[in-house]
Image (cartoon, rainbow, N blue to C red; front, side, top):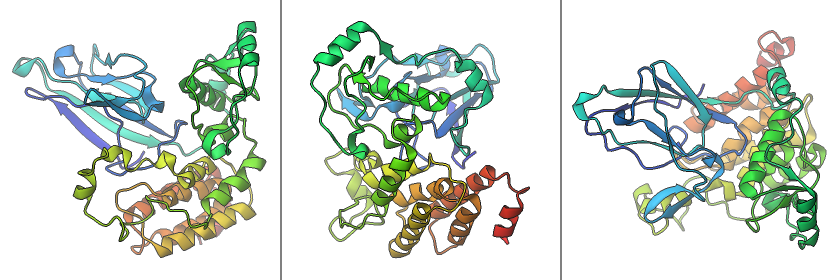
Length: 386
């Protein structure tokens, strides 16, 4: 459980909310395609349509935001919103952290009870693999529900020109001619998540029937078996530790070129929700993908990442609001180093000399490392902690 929690109240006069994705306790962090964060909504009372129920858009957790007719919402708007009316109190709803949702307007006035909803956030601390036995048993004998494999698809795929080649961090080449297909890139993401969670790799190539060129998440490519880990690890680490001078707009505080208050930034011509899109930052995407690895021993690439991260944290402080590739690197250390080696690199960051955000992410990394080695029972962990 993370520190992000809140009690939402809907009562007479509550106007409701606009559609949104929740932030990270007031901060902008990278959004993972895989379910690395989950939200739990607890309703202590029954909820009717008059009480301002929560509305969600199913399947929208992989959609970026856009403005349509002056209203902010998910691109594509795959389905209509669904009202979460509840027949009795004590109900919980578990959903993807990035699902688009809103609190609706209270229509009953003072004649209906106040609606309370307690929101809690959880973050994954265990690796995706091996697949938990219950999930493996549930998926046994079932194919990927988001893939289509027919002769007609094969014929269409054979006639289609091959897609352009790109770096995997920009668009992993998973769309060469094949008999397996998905309708669009949204379904490709769903198919990839299903494959990663169930431990059933995707076919080596898939045809995307519509949607044009699109970026594909590097972490998904690793987790669903399309991008082999031995091949991915050196490229991802080299992307993170790169010092080629390319600008990283979300790294640290304002520079002389973009100095100004947060209020001035928000008043710029671009919507502020588009100014901090970390998913477009190659370093953020690479560091996020590294969180999906599992290391049993100290690895040279992991140590390289740890040294680069330490140097970067000393040079420029982590910004108090914006996304930052270094925040994604902290939990990645738990994935690319042995638990004890990760402990040695993360504990020194728990100091007032580091920002609160840095310390929080370092603590999450320490917790994850402890889970991976069954601490505190692990003697190696106890030795490293001393």
